Length: 87
Image 1 (cartoon, helix red, strand yellow):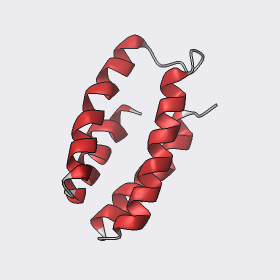
Image 2 (spheres, rainbow, N blue to C red):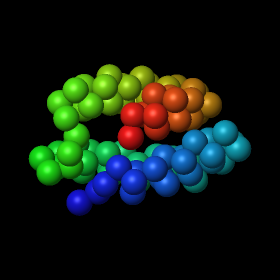
Image 3 (cartoon, rainbow, N blue to C red):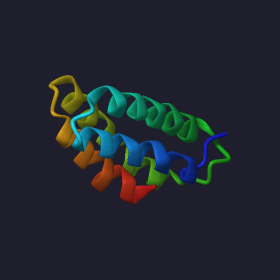
Image 4 (cartoon, helix red, strand yellow):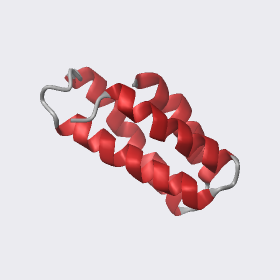
């Protein structure tokens, strides 16, 4: 089971590495974060309310779109300012 606290470190590392231009490392941390996030979202004992899930879900599409177009600074911004403050 993944906890919110366990998600903070890969999120922080992804943001840091993307901002430093270290795309490979940032992507690796982003993958770990997303895997953990999906694990958390699927766990009925996670303590996340439907409202909290509803606040997280809309940001996943824009993050994936920004990564697909190579806008990794925007990925870092979305991770930090949209998802990070909700976890």
